Length: 116
Image 1 (cartoon, rainbow, N blue to C red):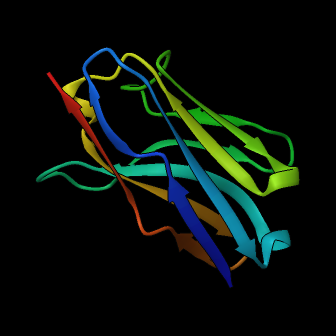
Image 2: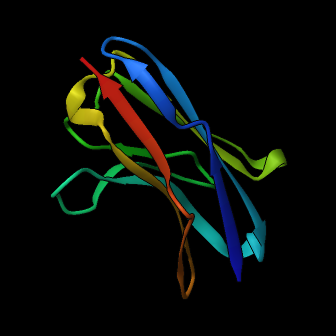
């Protein structure tokens, strides 16, 4: 089992920045990728960004390219999502995700609210 704990959400004005953190614990050696998904009001959950834990290959949603950066610190078992130039469309609950050889795991979610 893998446990994921997010932190760093909150309220920010449009154009501002936030950084989300996700700390993984448990069967960490089984994790292949870590990433962030989000679910806005009345919307389906969507991929925001993900990173492989070995080579650091990244994937981003088109809507966040150039504004969000995902990074990892394997020594701290932590993945970060640096978000810049936020807008109202970024308002959502952001979920940390880890994918292992056999299972996928989710954090409890962190609310990000962007005020215009």
